[in-house]
Length: 99
Image 1: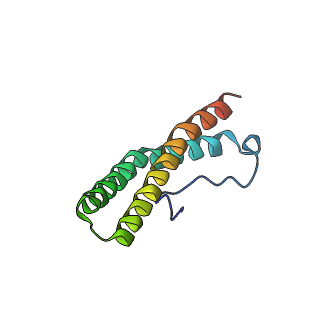
Image 2: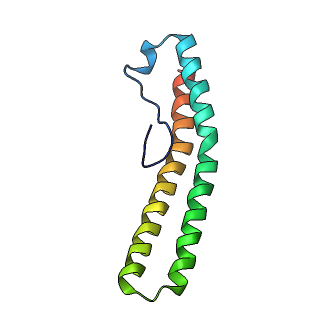
Image 3: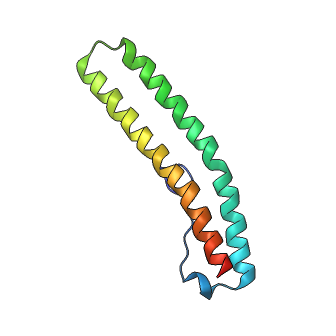
């Protein structure tokens, strides 16, 4: 489980070709389930960003404005990382399955 991203990430303790076909299929199936939750996780983070942006619109305290900006930036970074995982691992796993 990756606490920052809020999802489980694949962890392979050996090279892909060292897994049997059944194991590979199981890994891919499990990843597809996890991967399917990524868009929902991104939506949750977008709600948090929108909430902080609304707070920022009315915030008069400079220090709090800076904190909100920092939080928004971190949430956006998490979303970016989630999209990378969503796109990259699908291609990597599919590619490995076809070799």
